[in-house]
Amino acid sequence: MQLFNQISWYLFQEWKRYLGSIALLIIIAILQLLPPKLVGFLIDTISTNKKYHYKLFYWLVLIFLTSIIIYIFRYMWRVLLFGASYKLAIILRKKLYLSLSQKNSSFYDKYRTGDLMARATNDIDKIVFAAGEGVLTLIDSMITGISVLIIMVIQINWKLTLISLLPMPIMAIIITKYGKKLYIAFQKSQQSFSNLNNQTQENIKNIYTVKSFGLEKYEIKKFKEILSETSKKSIIVSKIDAKFDPIIYFSITVSNLLSITTGSYLVWNNNITIGQLTSFIMYLSLMVWPMLALAWMFNIVERGSASWSRVNEIISENNIKQMKNKKILHHKSNIKIKISSFQYPNTKNIILKNISQKIKFNNIVGICGPTGQGKTTLINLIQRNFKIKKGQIFYHNVLISNFKIHSWRKKISTVNEKTFLFSDTIANNISFGNINITKKKIEYVSSLVNIHHEIIKFPKQYDTKVGAKGIILSGGQKQRIAIARALLMNREILILDNALSALDKPTQNMIFNNIILWKKQNHTIIIVSHELHIFKKINNIFIIQNGTIKDSGTHDELIKYQNWYSKMYHQQQQK
Image (cartoon, rainbow, N blue to C red; front, top):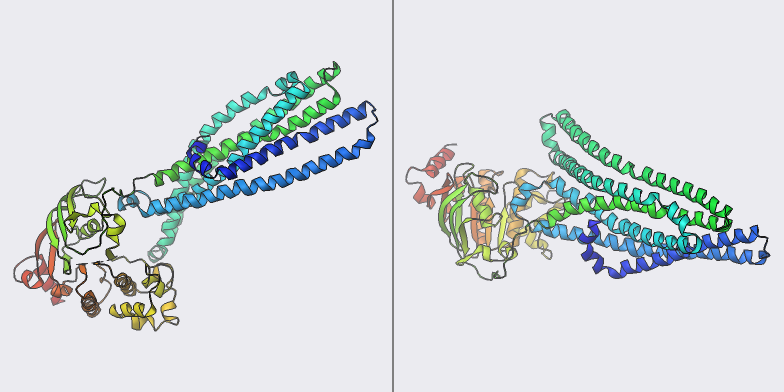
């Protein structure tokens, strides 16, 4: 029942739909009381030999018309109620997507893709089902149950009603007990389903790696183990779920037995008529639905509540905070980096320390150093992918944390070593983020990265579909398309993080020279690379070793004395 409180904001938002559904359900509940009353009256009329045969046709037509009206009203409330619940699915998925787009990198270190997909699909479906069927069963069972109960007490016999409904409180207690167990079991089942989703997603994503190492049998075995665990959790849920119906049907059977035995005694003593007993038994049959609905409601609402907890966990997880004093960026300026120390969340290893440097606007800056020394970490901090606790990064002498995250990132284009391409055409991948861009501009940036001549060799040229993650392209082609995309965005700050690693030296030099021409005194470029030959024309080079900047300067300055840069440069030249 907690779920209704959790989604109360939506119930109030769509109050017209829900109120309309409730009104129709009340009308239906009242109309359902008419047929048993008419049947009881007919039986009493026939049993007492009263001459009302001429009204028989009238009563039958009335029962038929009542059924037709009930059918129409049932259709109407379904449109209203389920329409509202499906709308909730759209709202929740929008909220979830918006929340995911505002999370920082530490969030994605905590949650896996398959788990997030399970919450966005399976869990939201359970919430929507509870918001539709759950509301229906709650309102319909309450209205039908209360209205039938009033008729049974007032118009037939209160003693018979009391005795017949004795099993109901016991049934309610047992169902409540199992409902709590179902909530816990279903949460575990959903988490197990998320694990299964994770494994499936990773296997499909890395299918070529699995095949290349011949690990199909190993991965199948691992998948079967996770599948078996998921099945066990689902069976536990099913076992608890299976206990609901027997309890309900046993309670109904006992109620019918009590009503017949007690009713027969009352008829024998002339306290009620046979027609009244018949009406009572028909009314009691109408109570079957509220009782079944009660068990069903507990089932779907507890499932929905468990799913809500999982979805709300993601939505309510801290997003990147937007302070009230954020400033919108309209200028171009220098970047100042002052970091005392930095370590990733939930780790103790210090990745960066004692860094104090300036990246001047309109300059090209190179970052190099041994593997695993913090180069990419520094790039992540400039992009505000992680929060710096001991240190700051300034832009135009203002903390970048004081800018709106969207405004700051609109100034940056980044190309990483591991590029991502959408399952779309080459043209759409290059023009990503530029809806109204012309084909001429797409071809221009493609020429800058030396891939235009390769694209036009494809049968459909720029309209060629690249497949999942650009499967039809080579590593070098993917990188060049990603660089073309970044150039087309024409942002103030261009970051290339090992973005040329899959290319040969002549192509690297050609692209770098073209980027210098593209720059046109309007861009700050930061290049991270192990290929030191491209740093010859760079304004400033930072050498990161052991998490700090050991040396800095131009290529000509650094090559003059013994340091990591000069040593590696000479080694690369000898190759």
